[in-house]
Image (cartoon, rainbow over all chains, first blue to last red; front, side, top):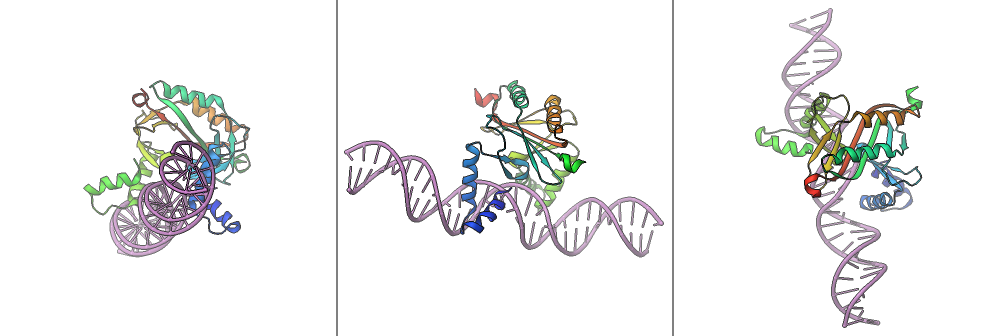
Length: 106
Length: 106
DNA sequence: GAAGTGTATGTTATAAGATAACAAATCGGC
DNA sequence: GCCGATTTGTTATCTTATAACATACACTTC
């Protein structure tokens, strides 16, 4: 869901809302780990995982738009290790996979 | 480098260029594997790797803006495997790491 | 309690990123 | 050469995100 889609929905309930309000709320939710940014679609998804420290792997179905969330510490640790080889200090990971979900791929 | 930064530069050499032209060129370059999209910054980077089939891991320094490119088949394969557990058919990977590069972290 | 400072919130305006739409040119097949 | 498909260039508009500003609120100091 993009910020503007959220805005359109909230406008039906609460007149006069503007983009900054939505973005601030989304930023707060992400800081709490309750929502994730989906960079490749300029969108946001609510967190479906039990609270983990690592960013999730988001699998996006290009056909139906569904988003699956996978927590995988091995990937994140490997990313941190790869980049550490050049002295890089990793702080935030963005991991997204585009494809077709099980239902659409069948 | 964002598309508009590229556009500004090209405008000095070739008057009258417009965004679509730049985006088309960038799309073509990405199709050839000669450039990569940096989703989290709405930017593009030229490909520095020997030609690999997999999307690279892009490590972005939030301090100086430098971008390191790492090719790692293990990460990509694991991403494909994780998502395949639910029948997902992976086609495109987005893997980016934000942090501080070796020079800035020192 | 009043004043000052910093932060949060809401609103307005604008910046930044991207694409739709259209016209013209080019290419390939017949 | 003609026609349809594709490519290229241009104009216009859409989409996403943030800067800027005003106001309110919270906290600290006197």
